[in-house]
Length: 321
Image (cartoon, rainbow, N blue to C red; front, side, top):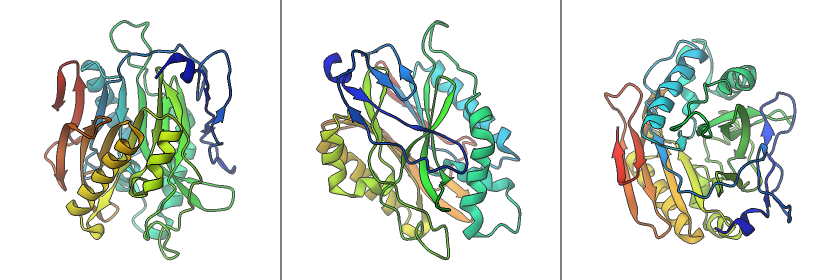
């Protein structure tokens, strides 16, 4: 992507604050003299992004929000050690927090409970993850897609929202648009849908988050292409109720196809293990803009790795750690 095209992108996101409708606003295409990110003016990097895709092991218990942060910090250090620019976590990675939820918490009340963990902590604690730097201390800190979480809206329902961390800020960057039946069940989670894909700029590249079943819709590919998206972050969660490994393979194939449609690279990652009574099949894959698989972690529902395996891009290929 040329710097001229990049300079036309101005994207707005929203902070994680309670009691307000925080649906991200539509991207505004204008012609400012500088490139914008979701946090204002940034230098326009144009080097290749190297990502670490963390297939979180949900079965590993945490006793509080701080314990969850410590797991993220550990993986962030490892990603930094391997020279990565970006850490990507799965859809609903936050379900690991259910290990310390009240024993009598009903499934219907889980979204609000999880959302409160983020409302109370995201602005200060989640965004306070130390800015580990790649190489010299003057380099920009890594960006983190901290998976998705239910975020309460002003209409009283939650959205399934991707959380983006960068430069000391935590923002609600993208709402899931196409929800599953379980996500819209009036006797279950009963989430609210997002409205549109919201691109953002990171290190000179136009990126977008396309969450799980959003990739199952062909129109997503054409939308990504029209927005000039170069990199698609595709977090997912596939539980045993949705046929497990088969569902995982289907969702990853759909993410790969949307990348082909858009001419974009795809980083796909799903959670592994059990939390909140759900067993999830997950893994990770990197697809180039031509749909070739550059590396993968095959679908699994359990792992001996307490953190969960991570697929990292190197200068000369990829590695599972």
